[in-house]
Image 1 (cartoon, one colour):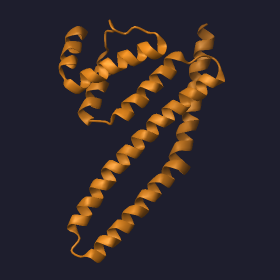
Image 2 (cartoon, helix red, strand yellow):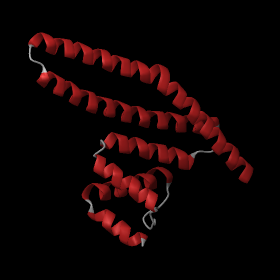
Image 3 (cartoon, helix red, strand yellow):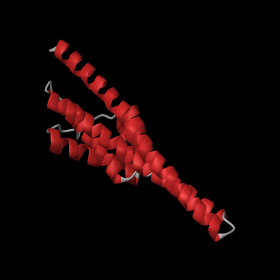
Image 4 (cartoon, helix red, strand yellow):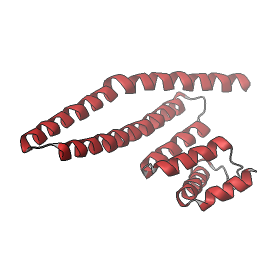
Length: 165
């Protein structure tokens, strides 16, 4: 069943590139050969969603870095910090892409709807304020809380792995 799914996934142009990139990158960074990997429905759905969303390559690369850190995470605090940093980098890249994509579209729609140049200037100033508030929201509220949650999660992973050893 999964092989048929993988063949169908390979036929999709972007999803197959994502799957190949994932396998190659994991082999290069961790030494794991995932060529005969039987993909799970969740993994397949994730790749298809990423392909349909047309996410920038930087986001996928950042997600791969998170996967590598998770696979190679040991019991040293350096590994935990690398894992947290790679997740934060991924989320920040996605946040920047998402906010710029949608706020720029909104700005263009509003500018097209403006009847005069003076209102257009007001809309542009409003856009700058909203963008600044979004950056401030990320830096002061969302990012620190996400970092604390990631630290808690990484510590829980380490505790479980040390108990099972």
